[in-house]
Amino acid sequence: MILTCPQCQTRYQADASQFAPAGRTVRCAKCGHAWRQAPPEPEPDPDLFPLDAPSAADATTSSSITHSAAARQDFGIRHHPQPITKPASAWVEKVAIAGGWAGLVAIILLIGWMALRFRQEIAVLWPQSSSLYAALGVPVNVRGIEFSGVTYRRDVEDGQVVLAVSGNLVNISRREQTVPTIVVTVTDADQHELYHWSFSAPKSTLTAGQTIAFLTRLPRPPAGARHLKLRFATTPE
Image (tube, rainbow, N blue to C red):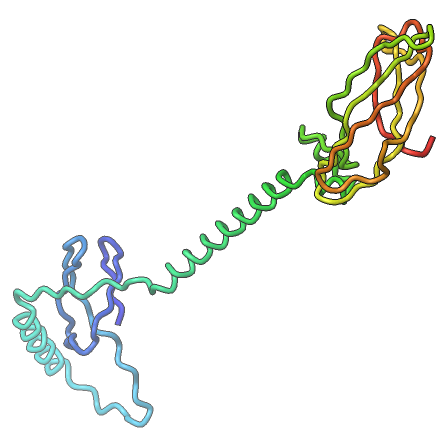
């Protein structure tokens, strides 16, 4: 049977056979409150029929004797049943849920780290991702090839000025890349275009990590040329 302390509402599991018909005094192990606990109502036996009810005097006498005996029996008795504990499965379920959330967070962090670590390879295979990386402040090179060490100088050959532009092409991806046509644009002091020309690199493809040098020359460059820009042509020129 289940006992509930009227004072602190702590619940206990007790053996109903330990309770006399008149009940017995029990004490809460948590708050120390004592109360008289009646036994559970017996379930009626459908095969038995009640006898004639006893007289009022017999009932009073019987009740007094029973109460007196129960009082003597309960005198000095302190019953300390054990509180009902929650099943261990509830804790196992909470631990499993917490572990599942921790695993999900770890997977998300791992995916984010890989997306940044291999962003160049991802951008080459999926050029549309470049806009997302740019929004995150992490620009990428969708072609997988970049310029490095670009320099220019003015030479005089046969009495005329020649603009020589040199540098390196580097395959920064992990796969072989086709080298597109290179376009050189010269601009004035206000960044206005004055002239542009295109040329092909010494090699049409670059293996992963390969670097090659290039050189292009422009006879009689515009007099007002102050800056130059290099880019890859989107279509053959």
